[in-house]
Length: 298
Image (cartoon, rainbow, N blue to C red; front, side, top):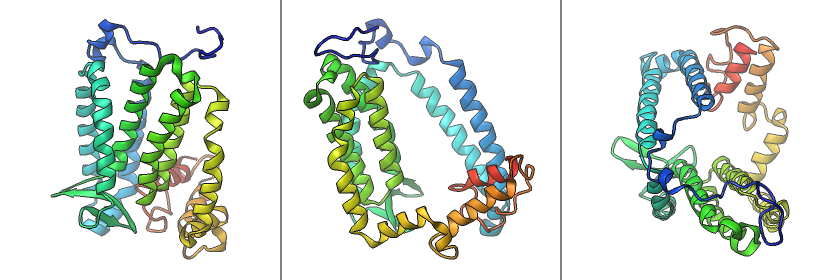
C-alpha cells in the first residue's frame, strides 16, 4: 500500500517495478488467471454459436455458401489462440523494449491509411491498408500499442505520475495523437475507446481525479465545435438521440436494433428464432449481433 505523501501518489498503484527475474521469464511461466481464461472461453463459445446462427442465411444469400462466414470466424479463432500462445511465450522485458518502436510504427500506419492510393475506403471511411488478399486495420493495432505504451511509460515515470506536467500530460498528448488520427478516418468508436483506455490506465496507476479532469476542459468545447461544424457529424448525433425521427433512412439500423430487443422480451424468443436477422437488421452477424442475442436469449 502506498501512503499519501506530498508529491507522491495517493492510492495503491500499478506502477511498481517488475522484479528482474519476472521480467526475464515468459508470461506463461508465471501462470494465468483462471477467471480470465474461463471468461474468454465462455465468450468465444457464445460467439461461435451466435456467428453461426446469425450468418447462416446471410452467407447463403451473399456467397452461395451458408458456412462461408462461419468458417472464416473459426479460422480467426484458431489464429487468435495461436497468437495468444505465442505472445505468452515472450518475456515481458521484450514487450517493454518494443513499446516505443511499436508506437512509432503505428503512428506511421495511421498516417499512411489517410493517403489516397494506400488507404482503402469502405462505407465512407478510410480505415484499411491492403496487402494483397489481406486488409490491415491500423486503428485495431493502435488499441494494443496504446496499452503497451502506457504500461511502459507509466512504469518508467513511477512517482512522477503525481505531477500533471511530467506524469499525465505526455500521455494525453501521445494517446490524443493516436485518437486524432483515428477520428480523421473517421472512426469515432475506436477513438473513444482509446480515450477510455487512457483514463482507466492512468486512474489505475494512481493519477489523481483532478489531474485526469483537467485535460477534459479544452476537449469538451473542441468536441462540440467539431460536431456542430460538420453536418454529417451533427446528423449522426441527432439520429443517435432520436432514431425514430428517421426510421427509414439514417435511423434505420438503430430502430431495427430496438425492435430486436423489444421483440425478444425478458426471456428471449429462443435460440435461432430471431426474425430481425432475416435481412431486417443490417450487419446482424457483426455490428448488431448483440441485438440478435437480446432478441433470442433475452
